Length: 119
Image (cartoon, rainbow, N blue to C red):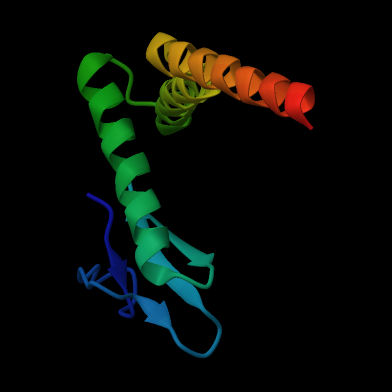
Protein backbone atom coordinates (compact mmCIF):
# COMPACT_ATOMS: atom_id res chain seq x y z
CA UNK A 1 0.00 0.00 0.00
CA UNK A 2 1.30 3.46 -0.80
CA UNK A 3 2.23 5.54 2.18
CA UNK A 4 3.51 9.04 2.71
CA UNK A 5 5.91 9.91 5.45
CA UNK A 6 8.32 12.46 6.85
CA UNK A 7 10.28 9.58 8.34
CA UNK A 8 13.29 7.91 6.67
CA UNK A 9 12.36 5.09 4.29
CA UNK A 10 13.53 2.44 6.74
CA UNK A 11 10.72 3.33 9.16
CA UNK A 12 8.07 3.67 6.43
CA UNK A 13 5.55 5.16 8.85
CA UNK A 14 2.20 5.95 7.20
CA UNK A 15 1.02 9.53 7.56
CA UNK A 16 -1.90 11.45 6.18
CA UNK A 17 0.37 14.28 5.14
CA UNK A 18 3.94 13.36 4.34
CA UNK A 19 4.82 16.72 2.85
CA UNK A 20 8.02 18.42 3.76
CA UNK A 21 6.93 22.04 4.11
CA UNK A 22 10.30 23.45 3.05
CA UNK A 23 10.49 21.99 -0.44
CA UNK A 24 7.05 20.45 -1.07
CA UNK A 25 8.44 16.92 -1.35
CA UNK A 26 6.36 13.92 -0.37
CA UNK A 27 7.85 10.53 0.45
CA UNK A 28 5.64 7.74 -0.87
CA UNK A 29 6.00 3.99 -1.12
CA UNK A 30 4.77 2.26 -4.25
CA UNK A 31 5.08 -1.50 -4.52
CA UNK A 32 7.63 -1.58 -1.70
CA UNK A 33 9.82 1.12 -3.28
CA UNK A 34 10.23 4.57 -1.73
CA UNK A 35 10.01 7.68 -3.90
CA UNK A 36 10.41 11.34 -2.99
CA UNK A 37 7.99 13.31 -5.15
CA UNK A 38 7.47 17.04 -5.37
CA UNK A 39 4.22 18.84 -5.76
CA UNK A 40 1.99 21.46 -4.24
CA UNK A 41 -0.70 19.05 -2.97
CA UNK A 42 0.67 16.27 -0.78
CA UNK A 43 -2.74 14.63 -0.35
CA UNK A 44 -3.22 14.43 -4.11
CA UNK A 45 0.25 12.96 -4.61
CA UNK A 46 -0.48 10.36 -1.94
CA UNK A 47 -3.80 9.53 -3.60
CA UNK A 48 -2.05 9.01 -6.94
CA UNK A 49 0.65 6.87 -5.32
CA UNK A 50 -1.99 4.72 -3.62
CA UNK A 51 -3.77 4.26 -6.94
CA UNK A 52 -0.59 3.21 -8.76
CA UNK A 53 0.39 0.92 -5.89
CA UNK A 54 -3.04 -0.71 -6.02
CA UNK A 55 -2.79 -1.24 -9.76
CA UNK A 56 0.67 -2.78 -9.47
CA UNK A 57 -0.49 -5.10 -6.70
CA UNK A 58 -3.57 -6.14 -8.71
CA UNK A 59 -1.40 -6.92 -11.75
CA UNK A 60 1.02 -8.79 -9.49
CA UNK A 61 -1.80 -11.01 -8.23
CA UNK A 62 -2.93 -11.79 -11.77
CA UNK A 63 0.48 -12.58 -13.27
CA UNK A 64 3.29 -14.92 -12.37
CA UNK A 65 6.02 -12.33 -12.88
CA UNK A 66 8.00 -10.81 -10.04
CA UNK A 67 9.80 -8.32 -12.28
CA UNK A 68 8.75 -4.92 -10.89
CA UNK A 69 9.52 -3.12 -14.16
CA UNK A 70 7.26 -5.48 -16.07
CA UNK A 71 4.55 -5.06 -13.42
CA UNK A 72 4.89 -1.27 -13.66
CA UNK A 73 4.49 -1.36 -17.45
CA UNK A 74 1.44 -3.63 -17.22
CA UNK A 75 -0.08 -1.39 -14.53
CA UNK A 76 0.63 1.67 -16.70
CA UNK A 77 -1.14 0.00 -19.62
CA UNK A 78 -4.16 -0.72 -17.40
CA UNK A 79 -4.24 2.89 -16.23
CA UNK A 80 -3.86 4.16 -19.81
CA UNK A 81 -6.74 1.91 -20.88
CA UNK A 82 -8.96 3.30 -18.11
CA UNK A 83 -7.99 6.84 -19.07
CA UNK A 84 -8.78 6.38 -22.76
CA UNK A 85 -12.09 4.64 -22.05
CA UNK A 86 -13.17 7.52 -19.79
CA UNK A 87 -11.92 10.07 -22.30
CA UNK A 88 -13.95 8.37 -25.03
CA UNK A 89 -17.06 8.30 -22.81
CA UNK A 90 -16.73 11.97 -21.92
CA UNK A 91 -16.05 12.90 -25.53
CA UNK A 92 -19.33 11.44 -26.75
CA UNK A 93 -22.53 13.00 -25.47
CA UNK A 94 -25.19 10.45 -24.56
CA UNK A 95 -28.03 9.86 -26.98
CA UNK A 96 -30.40 11.53 -24.50
CA UNK A 97 -28.20 14.62 -24.38
CA UNK A 98 -28.02 14.68 -28.18
CA UNK A 99 -31.82 14.45 -28.44
CA UNK A 100 -32.31 17.26 -25.91
CA UNK A 101 -29.76 19.42 -27.71
CA UNK A 102 -31.51 18.79 -31.01
CA UNK A 103 -34.91 19.75 -29.55
CA UNK A 104 -33.47 22.89 -27.99
CA UNK A 105 -31.78 23.84 -31.26
CA UNK A 106 -35.08 23.37 -33.13
CA UNK A 107 -36.95 25.47 -30.58
CA UNK A 108 -34.30 28.19 -30.83
CA UNK A 109 -34.52 28.12 -34.63
CA UNK A 110 -38.30 28.58 -34.44
CA UNK A 111 -37.97 31.54 -32.08
CA UNK A 112 -35.34 33.15 -34.28
CA UNK A 113 -37.47 32.66 -37.40
CA UNK A 114 -40.49 34.19 -35.67
CA UNK A 115 -38.34 37.14 -34.53
CA UNK A 116 -37.08 37.72 -38.08
CA UNK A 117 -40.61 37.66 -39.50
CA UNK A 118 -41.96 40.15 -37.00
CA UNK A 119 -38.84 42.26 -36.65
